[in-house]
Length: 426
Ligand code: LRH
Ligand code: MN
Ligand code: MN
Image (cartoon, rainbow, N blue to C red; front, side, top):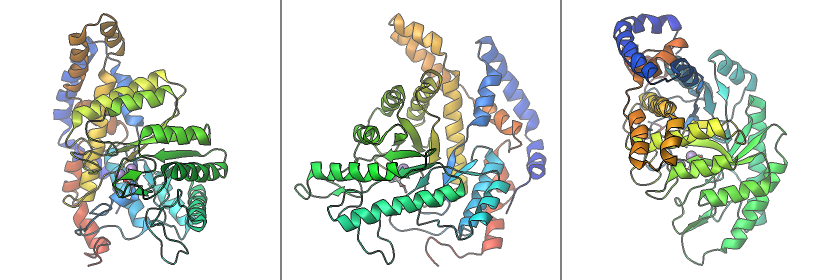
C-alpha cells in the first residue's frame, strides 16, 4: 500500500483552519520572545529518524508475541510500511535493518523500492545474540568476547558479512550490540572478556569501508543478569577510542539503570565528539522499549536540550544516526511508531525553543530559579502547531494518526496481506 500526497491533502482540508488559528497564536507568542520560528520549522522538517525493521511487527523482540494482522512478511513489505509512515509523518525517511532478520534476495529491487518511497538505509545491525540455523558455533558463552576462538571468529565474520550487505544497500554504518556477559559471579574472567571484545571490534573496524562508522551500543543487564561485557557508556567509549576516529558510542534510552542522568551522558559524549547514534524508546523499569515519550516526556525533553546544545556547539561531534527502538504487544505497530515519531518531534521542537543565551546568563548569575523557568517555559509550550507546519511543508499529514485511521490503512494491509502474521505464524 502506498499513500499519495493528494490523498493526504484531501484529508488535511478539514483541519487546516483550526491549524492556522493555533499556529498564528503560537507564532505571535514566539516572535514576541525573539524566537527564529522559520529556523525551528526548517530544523523540524529536516529531522529524519530511522525505523527499525523489527518494530513493524507486533510483539517486539522478547517473550510471547500476539499477532497483529496485516504485518509485513518480507523485507519489501517492511519497506512499504516505513513508506506509509514516512508519507504520513515526513520524519521516517530511513530504515535500519537487522541481519539475519532482513537479508535481501534481490538487492537492486530492494534499493529501487526504498528509493521510490524516499527511504535511505541507515545503520545496519548485526546479531550475535542468538544462534543461527546451521551455524558451526554457538554464542551460548559469548560472541565477540568468546573464549572459544571458533565462536569469536564466526561472530567477527558475521559482522563483516553484515557490512557487505549494508554496503550493497547504501548503508554507511554498523551498529554492534552484544548480549555477551555472565549470569553468575566467577563464571568468566572480566578482563579477558573485555580484551577479547576489544580485539574483535578492532578487527571489524579495520575491515570497514573508509566512509563507514562503527556504533557501539551498551546495556547494563539483560539477557545476562550478573555482568555484561559492554555494560555502560564508559566501556563503550573506551572501546570506541581503542578502535579509532570512526568508532562511536550509541545511546539507547532504555539501556540505563533507573534514574541514570542520560542527558549528562549525552553532554559528555558530544563534548568528546564520540556520540554516534541514538535509539529512542521509553521505559518505566528497564529496557521496556515502550512508545517514545509515553512515560517520561520531560526526561526526553532534557535529553533533547543537551542534543540541541551539542549540535550547536560541538562541531567535533558527527551528525547523529537517529533510530526508534521500541515495540510491543498491545498497539497497532504503525500507530505506535506514529506516536513515537510525534513525541520525538515535540521534544526536539521544545528543546529548540530554549533560549540558550538567556540560560547561560542565568547560570552565570547562579539564578537557579530562572534556569528552571527557562527550561520549563519551553517544555510547557504546546509546540504541536510547529510540528504540523513542518510536516505540511513537506506534504505530510496534518495529523498522521487521524489520517492513518481515516484511510483505514490497517484494514487495507489486511486485505492485501491477509490475516496471517509473522509474529505467531497463525
Ligand atoms: C538490545 C537492542 C539492540 C538490538 C535491539 C533489537 O536490547 O536495543 O539495539 O539490536 O534491541
Ligand atoms: Mn537498541
Ligand atoms: Mn534494547
